Length: 278
Image (cartoon, rainbow, N blue to C red):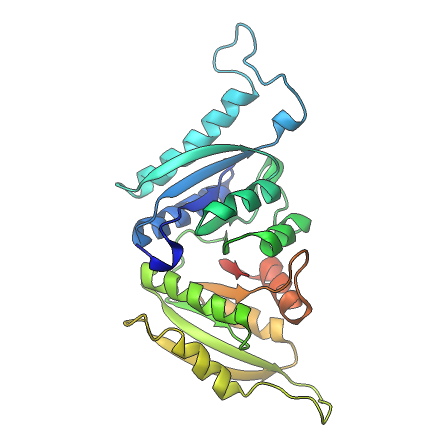
């Protein structure tokens, strides 16, 4: 069991879409490897609009409630079938995905979603819902594009901030469970600075970030310092060959300025899995 999570379950949103299926498969693999239970959550907004939840008189297995139960069970069965022996349950949660998953995040070690879905999950990564979840969740958020990434390395952009440190710790948990290596990347923007401006020493940032992983023996850690015109652009370039990106987000109601544009870019344009840590 992962000691940093306190045994809290992994929660994965499921709506029956292909993206949600990939999310369930990734979440099941991680939960089994980390020794954590998995909860498949189906977010169900219909009770907010109508009391006519079924069944339809004379029609067997009909109605909105029955449909929700069927979808939730489908997700649970997919997870259980992919990882025999996994402790997996299901929940139907009334509400829209961003709000419902944010509530569930207080009980979870990770919340996992797909990139897109049907119904309430539609456009999760291209609108305000993804920003709300990334900036409000009480635990790390995993956005899954690939159920089984083939690359060995997890990419972690670091800048020495507390959020960056938490991202490194979360990446360590993922690397241990999934048997991945970690690549720490510090990017400086190539621009003219004011003489009075101070910037973190790249070597110190990388050394300090690597030291946070010292308690996890067996993880292969590499470091890299780069200067680039666009920090998000370079991270996206490196992310193309990574098993996923783990990145720290700042702010409460919105994403902070320092890493906000980077998080936004990685969420919307990254080709692989993304983990957002607050």
